[in-house]
Length: 221
Ligand code: AMP
Image (cartoon, rainbow, N blue to C red; front, side, top):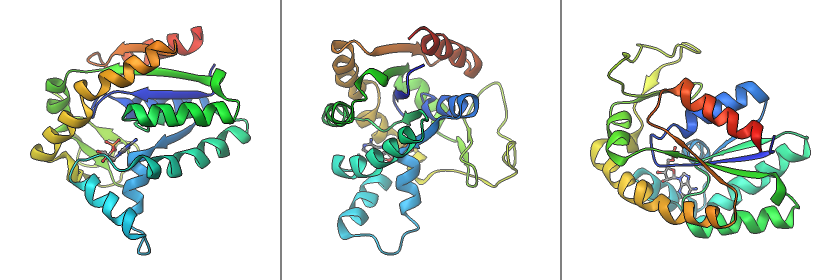
């Protein structure tokens, strides 16, 4: 199985949920740049450039590429040097980043270890899932808005308090979908397709079905 699994897909496509499944099953590391950025909110000594990046994040905009590379590259190397794999969850959101990561993988002799899986979901469905979804403040488990199941009062994994992310409010969410949804993913998908490392799954299916399809892709590569 490849050591570096990259998930691409818009907000609410299920990248975080599926990344967590791989982490649980295979002991891979989990790199969610969104989680790392949210953790930075607690740091009282951030540089002005990083503070500005967090302002952009809260408004639903992308943060600068240099910050993403700073957060991601060391963590990837740390995992790989321990002989572990790593799942990149939302760590690549434009073609410049995709190129930057490929250059990094080339420098580190990791190009053959990379697979990219796109989780496809329409912006319309994403809007429904993410609006009103809740996230556990303690362990990060995600509880999507669904017509078939109710969101529990507390986290079913750890009992932690569930909360709504600031950037999941309707207006910001619509902006995130416009800048990070179906349209934004097109050029990233084309980039990876051209270099022959792209696979795709239909993210509108249930979590176990998507998980199963991802499993088959990972075993076949
Ligand atoms: P997420 O938790 O994955 O939905 O990410 C939350 C927010 O973090 C996004 O809306 C962006 O503002 C920011 N972010 C996360 N990853 C990236 C990235 N690779 N490039 C730029 N901004 C990012």
